[in-house]
Every structure is written in structure tokens, then in C-alpha cells.
Length: 192
Image 1 (cartoon, one colour):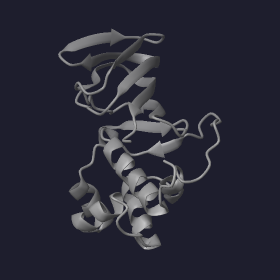
Image 2 (tube, rainbow, N blue to C red; image 1 turned 90 degrees about the vertical axis):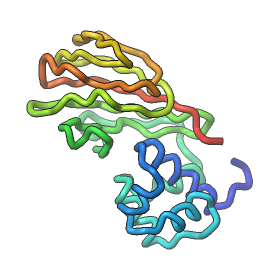
Image 3 (tube, rainbow, N blue to C red; image 1 turned 135 degrees about the vertical axis):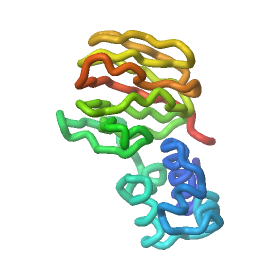
Image 4 (cartoon, rainbow, N blue to C red; image 1 turned 30 degrees about the horizontal axis):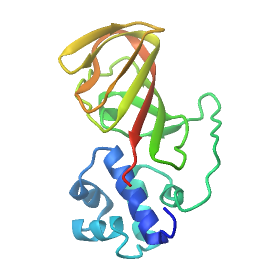
């Protein structure tokens, strides 16, 4: 992204974060208190958003505001997250009692990587209908689950893993033994 303006870099970042959370333009605009037209202009780099606008968007996306500048700044090529210090993220499924801890940020390049520690505690509900771009790898650390991908259910125990195309509906369907903890690594191609 040589010669990209700061407005274009921020816009691309906002769009990528919105898509990653499976939100439409109108959903995000509504949560951030903006019009859909205004959000489109921000995403297209057509306007220079105010700090107040960026703050509203950051809150609606549940990310630190600095995330909007990451592609514009020089990034380091390592992330070190100590036990228990991953960033808590709201994703679809959070309301069903699924807890997501982001264990590192993506690096510049054609692909984005998102490593999560996912925990389902007592009272969590099944949520077999996730769909998003890219590929996903999951590795079970604790508990037992019937994990659905498309129309097939895979019985998983600690040490088991699945690697799949994330565009098919997927997710924990039969919660056989809680708490359930698994590593989820999502990889997808960035919008060029």
C-alpha cells in the first residue's frame, strides 16, 4: 500500500474490521451513531474522519482506536501475549456465552491471521452457524464438543483439531463437556 493516504489506510482498516465481525455497513453505522453514507465515505477514504467519529467506530467495533492506524505505521513482526492477557473481543456468539481472547495482532501482508482462545463456560449455548471469510484451524485444549461444519458433526476431545473452509456454517453444536476451551486461528486474504 505504497503512497496510500492516511484516510485510505484508516478506511481500509475500518472496512476490514467490520467485515471480520460480519457486520453490514448499516449495522456498524447504527452502532456508531453515524449515517450509512458517512460510514461509506470513511471506508472509501473520501473524507478525513474526526477523532470523535473514530472513537465511536472503535467502540462499536470493540477495538482500540490505534487499530485504525496499524497499516499506516511500521509494524513489528512479533506479538507476545502473556497467559490471561489476551484482548477480550466481542464477536457473534459472545451473547451465547462464548468468550474470545485475541492472542496477537496481524502483520502487514496479503493475509490476515487472528489467533483466539475461545472459552465456553457453564451456561454457554451451542452456536453452529458462524460463517466468515477464509480458513479456520481449531485445536481442543479442554472439554468435549460435537463441532459442526456444514451438515457434518465431528466429535472432538482435547488434542483433536479441525482445519476447514470458514465460509460453510460451523461452530460448537453439541456441548458434551464444559468448560470447553479451544484455540481458533483464522486466516483470510486481505482486501487488496
